[in-house]
Length: 196
Image 1 (tube, rainbow, N blue to C red):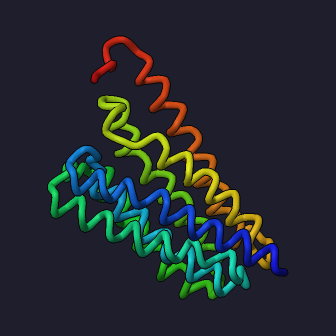
Image 2: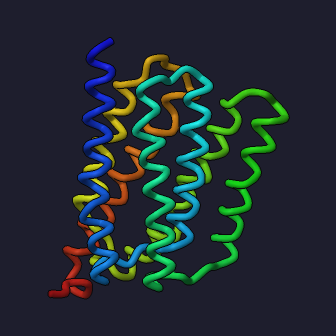
């Protein structure tokens, strides 16, 4: 069981390591996150943390809780710094879907349904960032998403109980981070997006 705690501790450290330069970049104006993506991700991540606790995820859930709290902080910082505050109808739909997960969990008494909805919503929450990165691939941090791909893999290894409820969210987010990294890297290699 000690290795589960070790994986969880490493995942928490990676969370702070990943977020520190990202937050610093926001404060310096070099990173311009999409406010609504981060609000959606913060809400979904924190609710998944609660669902994982209920599903006996144990110490493996703690990095998700820490991440949820910091993600909400990033949404606030992005708003304060007026990063990317454009909100489309699709963004509003993602937000509404995130909110519906709580009544669904309450009505079914099963955290799996909340995790399913929240994983889909969180993945859809990548939409505004994908749109932004496609147009401006230098507006996001490649190492940040790399650290989160590794962090979420460690979260899966740290879980005390494996089920769809505990594994789905971190595994899906790890894969989404890898795919976003591929998009960022490929767009940066295109001649029309090369900037200093």
